[in-house]
Length: 539
Image 1 (cartoon, rainbow, N blue to C red):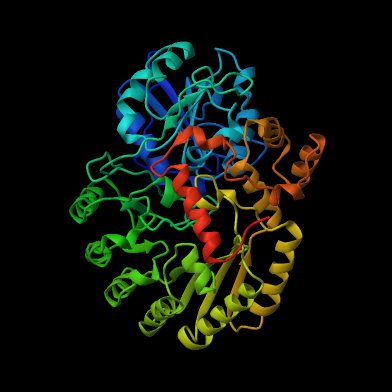
Image 2 (tube, rainbow, N blue to C red):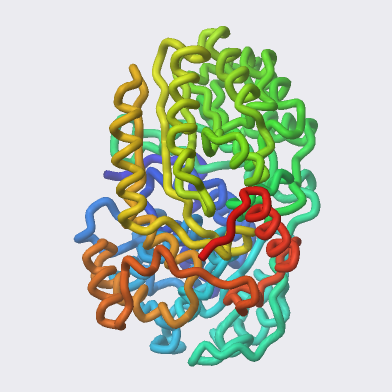
């Protein structure tokens, strides 16, 4: 199917241009909901001498990957820029490269292969599991260093690009910081953080598909414009990478946001504005922003909002924007545990927010919860069930409650990076218990994340370069649990054990070589405080 798009750029493939393939290793439907894709695409194409085309995962796995704009093979590009939002994207990226005839191991590529740069939230947290995939990683926000990066890309050979790019902040690569055995010899890398996003480049023009409604290619939010209000978070929940890596939060001013909306109308045709951000309500004027968007005739979609910021004015504004679902993230039904996690919010605050939404006419509530936190006592299951039951019976008595309950997964650069995870059997037992009990509640829909995939995500989040050969192999064979178990067994490793091993606080962690705002000592202190509050000590 040929997709018609607004604002897609198709440049002439003249010999002098630097050809950049922008890889987002997921399907068109998912990739086109990424503001990062829009940002990188238009940033690169602003440069007269650059040609940037998008490469996504084809729906038909028999088709080799190709660029959307001119249907070129990925091997035709000079540079491949891979954006990895989530850890599982690593496997899809390896698969795309393999199917495109490019070895995903830099040690086996030649000067004739494209230069590969990888960035995004996952490698910024811990790039070491895929250390030998790209020529270089870029860690952090691209806007502050884009000019230096583009100057490096203008070189004609991979060797010269590597030499030129070595001095750019946030760059980490083979031969610059580590050798082919993964031995580190370079300085620590400081991830790049933008200081003011109000003044940063923003993709006012955005690619919006025209003829995909009702098809498998239709983006999740439909015909939408994506508006980023902020980056980072100031709350620092102990399990969250964003609050510890992207701290303090950077926010666009109300004036800059309304200006973006005004300018966007002139160059885009859209029906909805999707408001993006890690903490969208913390600026305090979200209700005014939504009212402004609605006054121009657009619908609004807004992500999960902290219950303590959900006011009557904000709920009214969301209704006017035709948002039908309120999303809250209590995390757990145990208030003591929630406070220990630095999610400083009472049960009553969450219940009141849901009741306010229900009173105003909302009949769809989504709640995000997590089970299996470190030191979590057996009674937490009953408290969480009671929390959901109270929500159903007293505060959101009619309508649909969608409960997304996922297992706690250890993440790098967080205080809980030193924790084990529930074993496969522990997780299965808890899921069985929650299914049995939540099933009793009327019109509460429960979704649970497969604990096998939680283990895979933990491997990709925490391990180092010694796991690259396993990850590379699975990317080629197919990302299945069976292949994971087989590949680990071949290396004398146990799939089940990957859930329960943990780092000690005095261990040298792979990602200690990456500097974010909050240092390791801060994370250790936060972890020890958490254990003290819950009066426990992990094995």
